[in-house]
Image 1: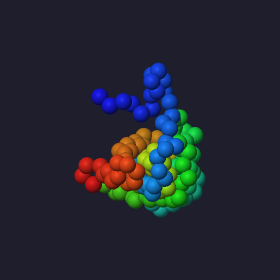
Image 2 (image 1 turned 30 degrees about the horizontal axis):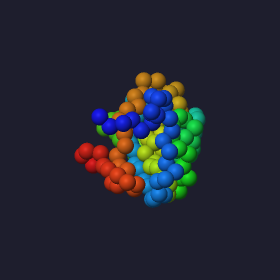
Image 3 (image 1 turned 135 degrees about the horizontal axis):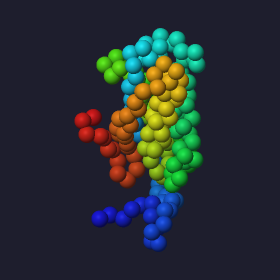
Length: 160
């Protein structure tokens, strides 16, 4: 069994020392979705909710979340993000909204957590803005799709 990277020799949670790792270009993409009623999806698509443009607000929330990942996830390193993109697509077959986020940096550690956090908070923001129409929405499928850079190079999720 391999050693856990965030546990020190005394068995305590510990931040990984990345000071000796070279700064390289790194990127990560993540996805997730929120399923909702057809009425709720129509309100999102037609931009008729009282709180405003759901996807515009959720995009900003996702970008902000990526920038604050190290404050939210205790052992994450703060990273100088070079780019964060949050994209949405309406999916009538769910019915709901799909979200994909991409984060980029040049650093000694990767941006997987930033991409996953961006998707998570963007979808939670959609929920917050649409809950007046549908409290039974389901957020699921949040996962890493791809990461590149660093010692381990390119990784892609199965089926991608």
